[in-house]
Length: 294
Image 1 (cartoon, rainbow, N blue to C red):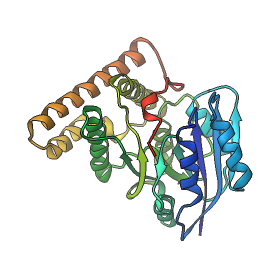
Image 2 (cartoon, rainbow, N blue to C red):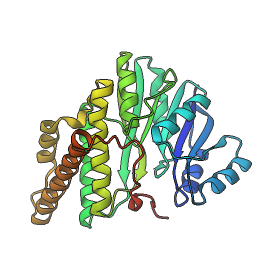
Image 3 (cartoon, one colour):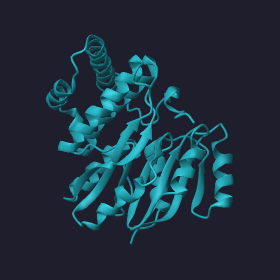
Image 4 (cartoon, rainbow, N blue to C red):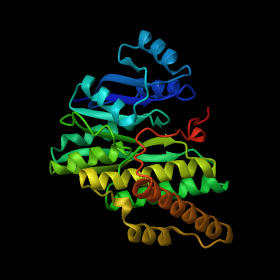
């Protein structure tokens, strides 16, 4: 039996946190035991703290830790790591929902001592018949195909409990964990059967907020932790993109639009990092990603 603690980093997650806790407390488990579910709420100003506190009263696994000041997601993760117990730690974004067997599928592979970190398959709930929904599905589909070749893990990850701290200034927390794990000589494992549902940006503004922050964060990661994620390989991305493309007029047009938005996001990230000297480890929230629907 592999034991685990789950950490949820939350900031104003009232629209999703109850469904997330319901999904985690009713997971289908065989070889995995959940010891603790710790929600670190950082400066939330909505009903997040109240909702989690009510869950903690009814469910002994659930624990609420309140940070009065928002200091960034990585700093909140370090609070979780101080309290977590078990063989494997799981990080899940507060605006996602795991499938019923996600924890079992993601954690069970740690029976292999060479596995140091695992990640599931983020699956967007956006409507692919809209332009932004199409772009979100395209990006996560490319992420999936790249991760099958060279694991790039995100949205929900699991890693061995020797990771006690990550750089609090990191804006790309999962990638910072990847750097620590690979430095130990352990393997990254992508588990496509471990489905975690998320919501992409439904406005161009929110999309660019996310992409510029992530790209600036990856540049910081290269400088501070000497680690480069697989999605920095533009050639690999383009190869997968060409293979994935359906030659239909609307699909081609929307694909070109998505590529342009990604390019603009990366250019803004370059400007933020090299010219404005910004490290966005406490970032402006993309509000349109926060509600996964009923």
